[in-house]
Image 1 (cartoon, rainbow, N blue to C red):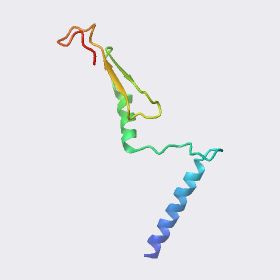
Image 2: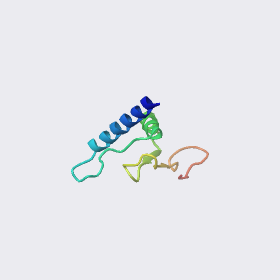
Image 3: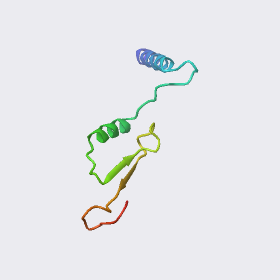
Image 4: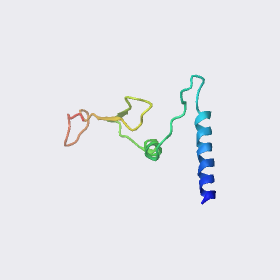
Length: 85
């Protein structure tokens, strides 16, 4: 039981050191912890192949979880010709 508590304490100390290492001169953290969802989304966005009538934009470049996709079918020959989504 003591060894488990010791390992937890060491792990907490290592995490604190990592946190201290990411602080800038002003004391604010410079590195953002990236969630697994954000890692997956980065991978998916890198592989996406958008057609020429679709555009993707990010209102906040620091937050990839919020994005907009504009689909302009005004010049396309399809059932939804003239529509914008």
